[in-house]
Amino acid sequence: MKKTVLVIALIIFGAAGFFGLRFYNKYYGNNVEKDGYVLIPHKADFKQILDSVTPYVKDKEAFEAVARDKDLDKYFKPGRYHFRSGEGNTKLVNMIKAGNQAENSFRIGDFGDMYQMIGKVTKKTELDSLHFVNDLNQVAVEKGYKNAEDLKKYFFIDTYNFFWTVSPREFFKKFDEQYNEFWTSERKNQEQKSGLTRDQIYSLASIVYKESGGKKDEMKTIAGLYLNRYRKGMKLQSDPTVIYAINKQTNFKEPIKRVLYKHLSTPSPYNTYANAGIPPGPICVVDKNSVDAVLNAEHNNYIFMCADPARFGYHKFTASAEEHAINAKAYQDWLNSKNIK
Image (cartoon, rainbow, N blue to C red; front, top):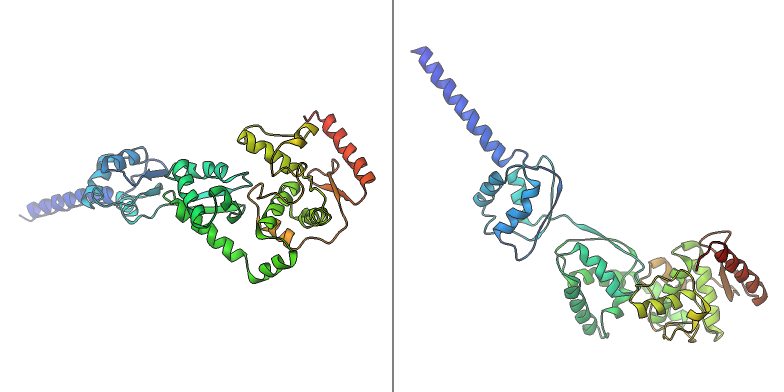
């Protein structure tokens, strides 16, 4: 009798252990085949969710069973979800139901125009570029501007994090807030003392950024030089403005490695060889350092600058036209020696 009871007990404990292990594996055991990101759009249905998840899970049927048990077929939040090795179905399902999506990293660079930037950004968002452009155009109109291109000054070069599901208005709100935080009372005072409008400051900052290649240590010197030219009524004659004028005409599809004399007459209000004064808008998205360089420009007597072939990325500055001619010839000779056309 005792032997029979023992056998029955062992059978019960064995069955309990077997089914308990199956239950644990189904709900909590690792069901991730490979690490990756699952994208679930706003208009997804349950089948689309399962199809998106399939490449990343070991047991699709187990995931589906747990998902149905937890009503994922009825309630879910769209997003970009990171499936990590070691995670079980319960954690995966709860993550999607709660909307605990992983952020995407965006690098806002020195884009020439907003549409160029939007095309890059939307590769990491749910919405297409046309939707983004239309919504940002509307934001611009609400702010009293013509279109999204006029919002360029609200953006700064840096790396930012956003969700894949970010809307254009949510996207812009982050930069709008950053813009307002940047313009402190101190910077507004510097703005007034400069005698420049906010738009002129950003236009000059974009020239400073392009001329410096983003190197902070020359920015204030370059800003001082261009302010000297501007206040003397001289044309700014900045090569990057010519490149921008050409890029605008070709939709940024023809990279210019070397500005030639034939380029200097390119018809454009941004071409500072053809027009006096400061361009009507920035020629690129800028960084904070370049704006601060204009607000805190170096007091110097420089009128001319030329790339220094002996120090790649840096320049030779002078107030002498004769000395500048020598510097320019040395640079042209260097370009020719490198067969840069």
